[in-house]
Image (cartoon, rainbow, N blue to C red; front, side, top):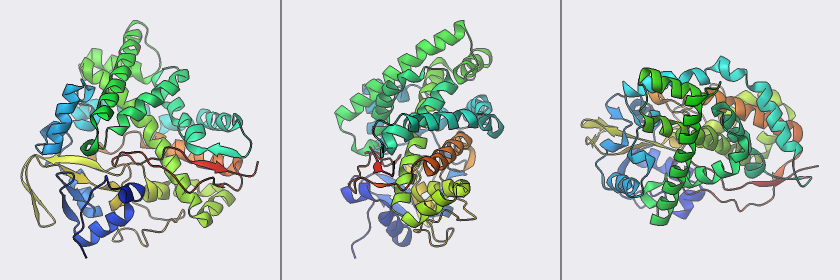
Length: 405
């Protein structure tokens, strides 16, 4: 047997990375990837330990490996916002703590729960507006517009701009597979990031003149009164909130629906009893979660699983691999929508765990319970599904289905 190597650009890995994650866990769980010039961790305990360890920084500018330098150089060359401003995702305490406290009130569970009736209304309206009876593209007709309408409303920007937001967001997310980005992809992503930044600069200026009850107004007030955010950080935080608040939930719904359709007994079980939706969403997060990996940079030399990891080297914690670790999940390759307990790390772990997880859970629960109620007997219209290019955020480009109209 040849030595296992992690290379996310290989077509077989893009189509289904989970067999390779399994081999890495079994044969080389603290793995040096020549393709990424980085460490790759696939065991649950290692992933959680790194995400909770203050010696590992979220600030990507600390990285000293070749690909990180190339990514930063490209960001600077194309004028990317990422080269000029740290966000909550890429900062450490105390800066991270200040930013998280500012934003967190909008995503507290009790605040999010108040949105349930309106999100349900949006979900039903999207299915009311289907152009062709019995046909539905889960991604384009439902999974994309649902979360982008919600996050756009929370941020106080018109939802009629969502087609433009989608193009910008798709371009930016496509660059997250940094090691394999062609120059034209990087340039397009940077152009779209600049366009999003310019858009939010106008929104921010408007909120300074006339505050509203929305997330942008909260951020502006915090930046102006407490000095929590610089102007560039304020803009970058708005861009990240829009993309993170739409892209990940879109892919959770899309990936989750594909998983259900490929496991028809589980799909039929949920459709027969939508009250299972809460445990079903947790299992879909574990089994087919959108966030495959996140990176950390050690601020000193450390040892992980007997391997010497040097300060400044990039460490990829493979969240999707950790979520199928048999030491923590019995029969981990099986989709079981009734699985309990289910201590997955789909939202990360430690101080950087996803702030928007109450909203993502609520949107996904409403999405799947609405599909169960409104889309009888669904089946895939094609077996030839196409995945996006990023190995960080895994998501389909489309998912056409048919159902009994």
